[in-house]
Each structure stands twice: as C-alpha cells, then as structure tokens.
Amino acid sequence: MDHPKNPLDLLPMDLPQGEPWGYALAQSLLKAPWAFRALKATPGVLDLMRLDLEALYLELERLRREYPLRSLGERPPHPAEEGALQALLARDPEAMAAVLKAHGPWPFALYRAFRFDGELHPLPSPRLPKPGELLGYEAQHRALEENARRFLAGKPALHTLLYGARGTGKSTAAKGLLRLEGARMVEVEPRALSRLETLLETLALLPHRFFLFLDDLSLDPDGEAFHHLKALLEGSLEGPPENVLLVATSNRRHLVRRLGENPLPGEAPEAWDALQDTLALSERFGLVLTFPPFDKALYLKAVAHHLGRPLRGQEEEEALRFALQKGFSGRVARQAASLLR
Image (cartoon, rainbow, N blue to C red):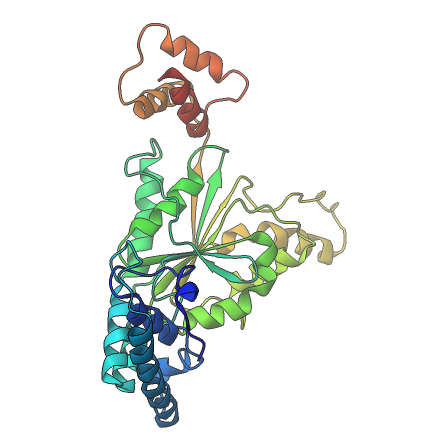
C-alpha cells in the first residue's frame, strides 16, 4: 500500500489539524487498493484489510518514533479520517469497512465537489454563489430546489434542464444546489461525455447522492457527445444510477447548434425521424426551467441588489448606459454594480 515515508512526503498532502502521521496513514487507508471492494466486503477482502492494518500500524509507530511532528494542517479532521485512524489504531478491518460504507473511499470521503474531464479531480474549495445572490426567477429556483431536495431525500426526481438567455443565473442556480445538505456535485466537461460510463459505474457504488452538472451545453447533432447524452437520458446500459441526477444548462432550447432544414412534404420518413430525434433531446429532461431575458426594471433592481442600496442620482442612467452594448442580464447588473461602488 502506498503511503508517505518521510516528512517531505507530507508537505503536498491536505492534512487536518492534529498529529500528521496518523491522519496521513488514515488517508492512505481511504485510498487503499481494496477500498472500493470493502464497500461490500467479503471474508477474503477483510483478510487483506487485516494484513494491511497490521503492517500499517507498525509503520505508524516507526514514523512517530523517528519523525515526531506537530500539526501541519489547518482544517478540522473529517469524520472519515477520524474513523479510519481509529480503525488503524485498533487494527480492525470491520471498523474500516464501516467507515468506507458510510463515507466512501478517497476522494469521495473528503470532498463534495469534483470536475470530470475524462479523469476525476476533487475541488477542495468550490466557488459557490452567496446566499441571496440571485434575483428574479423565484418560481424557477423553487422548482429546481424542490426537485433537488426530493432527489437528496431518496424520492423520485427529474433530470433537469435550465434553459434561457445568457447571464440570467442558470449556472449559478445549478451550482447553488451544492449548498443543500448531503449534496455532492460532479461538473462534467462536454468533451468527456463519451467517457462517462466508468464514472457512473463508480458513483453507483457510493453511499452519496450526486448532481451530474453539464454546463452550457451546445452539441452537434452529428457529434459523439450528442449521442452519448441521448443514450444517458434514455436509460441505456450506461444510463445514470439512482444516486445520480443530471442538471444541465444551455442557451439553446434543443441543446444543439444547428437543426438543419425541415424535410419537404413527402420526403422519406427517415428525414423526419432524424429531425424529431434531434428536437426530442431536451424533452428527455423531465424538468425544463426557462430563464427569459431580463427587462429594464429587473436589471435596475438587480444593480441595486448587488450594491446593497437604492440607486442614487445619476447612477440609474450610468447603469443603463453600461448595459447599452451588453444588454440586460444579471451578469451585466453585477458588473455595473461593481463600477458604481
């Protein structure tokens, strides 16, 4: 099992407050080759875990003796780290298996946000919207959050598409779901759609519930990504497991860059079938929430909201002048407010 062997190995690690060697080896247990197998541990897997725990316990005593160190970390320990350390000190494979069943292996045990570009990357400090940052679209936000809470509670929920004008807060609203208790999110880059099957197989094993976030989708109907997303939503063999919910945003109602021309009357049925297949992609999302463009009144209200006070004197005119080239949107309102401060 791979583990840090000298003090320099500890420096790049994300360690919590407390004696570093114990937590460093606890993290090694969360990354162990048998960590995923331990989610459904057989007697043979428990035997392997027992051997590694015995060996790692002796290694922990040696490292503490040869390199006595005080705390290197700044954050509190995660319950998964605490549990893994206690299992290590007790050399108890059943306790270690219980930790993995409750929290999952690394990186899922320690982090809630991830990016997937073909490989999974944990995001220790995701950028989340501030509470109350979004203005307008209250009905859409309520529907989005209600559906998300149903999913997190293990109830039936609908894959969701947020569609509408640029700068209306679709992506911000989707990212805000990560604030809900128990939520985890994987942001999937469009070019990685063709490599989702392995990710979904991994997520299906875990005790957590994940939002699969597909931001700013704009697909070529002849491209590989389009067909993978279509298969994902139709419930193919690589469809999402029950602990995964898709949340996508797009500026295009049908998610595609071009629809092509309508077939002429009397043309072969295959031409009409291809068009309908393209148009139907967005319909495979059970919940479609529309974010129309800002109007002047909502734009000015948003500028004042971001300023934290009513607009004064010539500020309204300055805000409107700022929007002349860019149009009315929540993003432009935030930019205008920053200039008026």
